[in-house]
Image 1 (cartoon, rainbow, N blue to C red):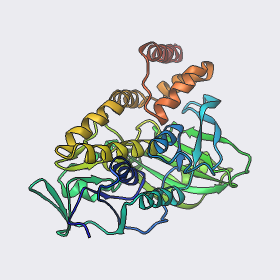
Image 2 (cartoon, rainbow, N blue to C red; image 1 turned 135 degrees about the horizontal axis):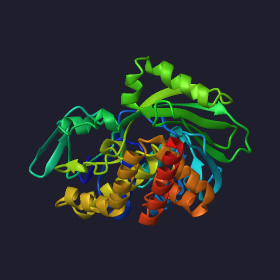
Image 3 (spheres, rainbow, N blue to C red; image 1 turned 135 degrees about the vertical axis):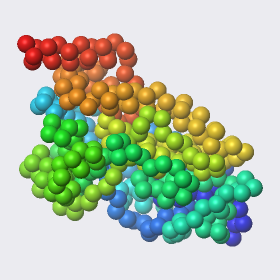
Amino acid sequence: MTDVWDVLVVGGGPAGAAAALRAKQLRPGAAVLLLDRDDFPRDKACGDGIAAHGRDELALLGLPDLIADYRPTQRLSVISPGGVRVSARVARPNHVVPRMVFDARLVEAARARGVEVRRHRVRSLTSHDGRVVVDGELTARAVVAADGAHSTLRRLLGARPTPERHTAIAVRGYADMPDDEDAQLIAMQRAGWPAYAWAFPIGDGTANVGFGMLLPTLHATGLPGRQVLHGRLAELLPHLPARDLRAHHLPLSPGRPKPGVGRVLFAGDAASLINPLTGEGIYYALLSGRLAGEAAVLSAGDPLTAYRRRLRAALGRHLFTTDVLARAAQSPGFIDAAIATAARRPEVFDLLVEVGLGAGTVPAPLAAAVVSRWIRTNLGARG
């Protein structure tokens, strides 16, 4: 038994597992405890997409082959709100791995590295004398809150939840798809924009399919959420009837996410780290979890300051970019212009993938080119 844990992680998803793995990787002798309210394997509503940037994070964690047995998807097709389509080979392939598999593998890797894993639901949190006490019995020098979109730790610490205007809701299911299909599809919808459906082939004869939109837009319909989400998914992907549908909330990044409170570091969905343009969250989760684990063991005196600096260095410019683009993307015409530009210029397509799935930024000349096309299109329509 350990009296004081060096790092206590709450949440066994990609962010929490990455934090625990990194802490033990950097300090093998550290006492690291990982808590989750569920046993693994367990399902998690998600798009299941793991971009090349996520695989980079796995390599940094010492797990380069964790998903090597899953077939890479080589192509990406995007249909804009106005019907503009671009389909191209991605610079680096993506993977689609069900979260029931991916999360369980990460937790097992953490356990193999010496992390203690327990099933435990957190109910209370107090801080004193440079320590954090969970449920009156577990004491730690640093805590990583990686407990998801509805983070209990965030609430217990009095941190405000993500505003509804920055929250999306999505429904996810699975559908049959030919084994040889290797293109991911994103089909955007003008009605209720921003909104889109996706179909991500796993490579085993099935695909992860879903539909997402902003929560305020859903509420504005005045209709039951199930009716809207399930109905629009069927409308956009009529050839892929879905099963096992589950809904989930996505707290989108507001550009400057709150990194934590005191000795508690927020990571992944608990930090509102979800790309507001695409809804991608696994890369952010792995990255932020890794950085939180680093700060917890390498800067034990003041882990939050170290984590804030690491997060800003890794994602600061990128999150500013996605925040600005998300505001511009409120106009579906802007997205039409961006997709039309990407259809003509492969380097723009690659850059959009970097921004939407990784930590890319947009050079000023390219932004000017998209805006110019957008303006010309609008003037032509008015003319």
